[in-house]
Image (cartoon, rainbow over all chains, first blue to last red; front, side, top):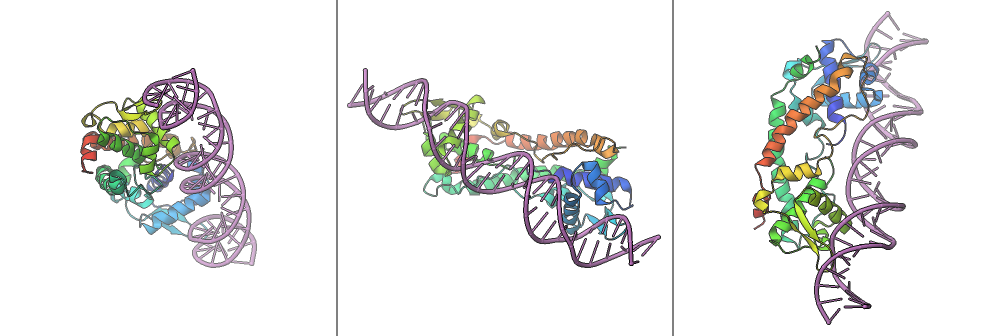
Length: 136
Length: 136
DNA sequence: TTGTACTGTAATAACATTAATTACAGAATG
DNA sequence: CATTCTGTAATTAATGTTATTACAGTACAA
């Protein structure tokens, strides 16, 4: 998770939370993030498939939250953008003839599950409403 | 942290923990990880600068732990390889003329510090000895 | 004292991932 | 029915990561 998807999604959702139901265009959102609008539309497409936002096509279209900001948790956003394990994985398959190489992936997976658990737990305690309130 | 440095460093240290003081060469370690020995030497160089391993040059050289495996915590390893924030950063500087764009980096930093705190805390409770014992 | 087996490190190339851009079909509105 | 928007695919550009090559320097052992 070394990429910008979490902060971008959180930025989008914060803008939507503060827009209080009015539709925001991908161009407007991209202007705040300072990135390409296609990236925003892609990210919104992902958030939509996770049930966090709704969007409307056509003239005067745009996006809104699919539910109250108090019901969207940072753990939901994390889950929506998560694509690789938190602490990284080696690209190569370790040597199966070595006691460590043989089992390290299993033990890494277990460790990662444990560690990611505490992280998700923490994010579970913070709502989008909590986060976006800070901008008032 | 989408790269393989944490798992590679942990793999190296696990091998060293199990070698119980005898020197392991970068070639041997690379053979277990299945990566290039230069990568191993670079990572060992980093771990050495963090005080986790010692190494000896020349014939019959190699690396060992700089202290007992029970005194090396996974949080030390995390700190040694950490190079970017856990949940990623957008590459672009957000629009300062937008209330959200103006302050989001500050609020993201605070959030990341909080979240990373619980992760480090978790890793602090697990030693290299605990981890490497699993391979017995 | 010299060959051998290592480390340390720099420089470069190969590869993988991420973001930006271009392009365009389709939807909703006025 | 022109306009303004979304949705999405395809491509290119930028960046980040790992592998490779090269070689100087160190320690050992015959």
